[in-house]
Length: 266
Length: 186
Image 1 (cartoon, rainbow over the protein chains, first blue to last red):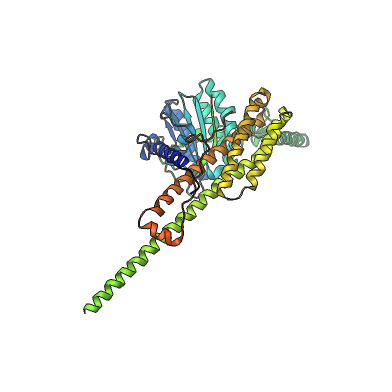
Image 2: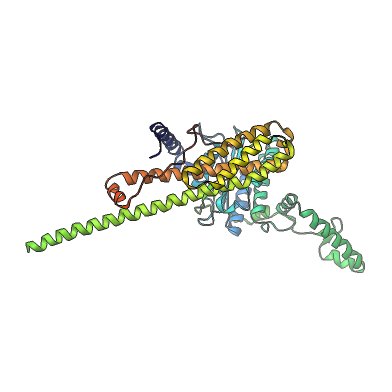
């Protein structure tokens, strides 16, 4: 072999260290799993029970409709000596989020005492949620909200933004989630202008029919169609399709991760 | 009768040897494939990093155009990485790239405006993500190599490995600062 004795020794040491890191009994194997309880595992206690349920039902519904599995985990702190990235990867793998083969899982990890956030993106979602986008969510959505201690709204907006990037058709137009999507897409402005132009033109030409126009469900104030005012997640809540327990129905599909995503803090 | 049982015994031993050989042979072939697969992942990530660099350099140049030395270094490291053949060469080129990147990032520190740039922030994330992917793929590659190297040297596998002419695979070593994955921090 081409390695000198010295470097061989170092290598052995290194591998030994890696081994120790990877097989630390407290966090190894099933113990990662014990940190997880379904879609939302709030170990740091940042969320109210009903907020947790709302998030979980949103994520459950998203999974049901698109098969993408998103998981949110909050922790007070990382195990001593553990790096955020390595820990997050192992936690993501333990959660088995995403379908095997599609690898469409995602883990949003929040470490409250250390003020660290990581978005761990499943291999299959890396094209939709690029590292740059993942970083943007942390910088522009999570960090500002968390600085004001608005944990729920920060997490929810972040999840919705990630959902929009993954599947733009998930939130119906006009819903809370769609508004967020529109904010995030620069191209939207163009369509907005086009939309208004069309509306103005059409109202101009159909003034005589205006009354019928409003009856069909258009509001004068917004000059746009009025869709369901209730967002899907809250509408979903009233339908009672989740089983009371926030983790109800979550089953990791065995999706793979390879370290994509971004880290940040607040 | 006695001749028969000796025959059976010999046949049994031969069969046992064949099955044993086939078992080890197949295990090693599978493991080699696995190592190659993991290495391909490492290469993907190296390539990915190389692809990111022109963008990164262009953005930094916009703010710090006169830092010629760093840009030349990066360009050299990049072309060396792209031209590298074989595992060892690639590992070395990758180390050179890492140090060049490290210097680029030190330059970046001196330009607060650059750090506030939206596009640069995203490029930083892409680069950090790629570095992370690289260290993950490196870790997985090394783990597979470790298992393989142990298997081909332990009896009885080592005999079959000897017949097959298998050799120990190289680890993807992390330069000097062993134990610590090179991390891009901004």
